[in-house]
Picture (cartoon, rainbow, N blue to C red):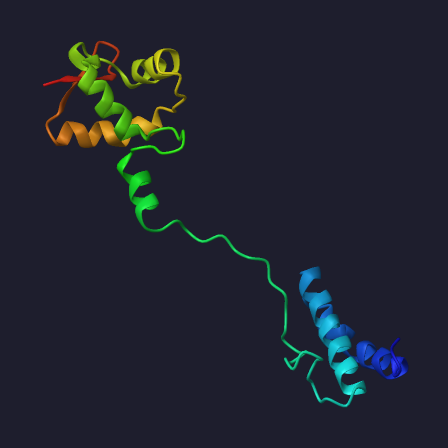
Length: 157
């Protein structure tokens, strides 16, 4: 139980204007927690120290954060090779289709997406292929022409 409750209540009344200026309720609650922790530590006569020897003010339990993948796993994701059932990226799928001879006849991006959906059971958006198709065209692996509908068609060189 809080021994000096009236003192803390008066302090909170004085700080209410400042605390309410923060829009985030989480920040407001944290400030109030700090007031109670400081009062509790002061009541124990430890001038800001908690039982564990760490300062009560500023001590906060934090949830673990996710870090970005690094090392070999990140390189595998970038190279398009999959591990553990992940879907290959747009470039890896296009290289596979080139190897299988899919682009012997000219194909639009829409046809590539439909082929992947129906024949490879892989769902892609057209945007997954637009960048890689442009790079493969610049690298000379594919050539690009416009059809009668003024859409680009890609075929093997």
